[in-house]
Picture 1 (cartoon, rainbow, N blue to C red):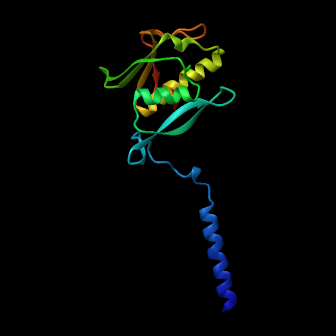
Picture 2: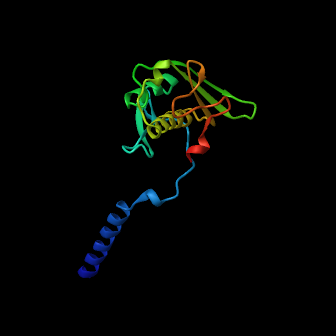
Picture 3: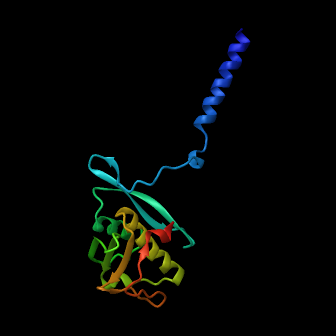
Length: 170
């Protein structure tokens, strides 16, 4: 009887350790909830996107903020060196267009162009900003302006009808 109890106890312990240490990343995930996650009574968790060290992929970083506003997200993007430090946020507008899509348009000061990046890094920088705002403000479309004009650099040029969309990041 003692041998049976010992084997049963070993089996139960092994079961608990196996279940407790299993990889849950393969489990089905629920639909993404775009409501900001609350970390405490007076703070929310936002997701900021940056690039990996090779500027090939976006990686996310969760940050705790007092509130999610265009300015708090903007400051976090400056803190992780996605936006040039002396850039100013001129304006951020969020509205619903005629197709019932939620659109965000951000306008930066001219200092936004004060970077020295290759085309890959520039593309990742713009994607980081777009995905960060799209996710945190639950946008369908997003546009970056500089001093009220369409974004254009030596590598990338946006037209009036060019937008980042949440579908381009899925």
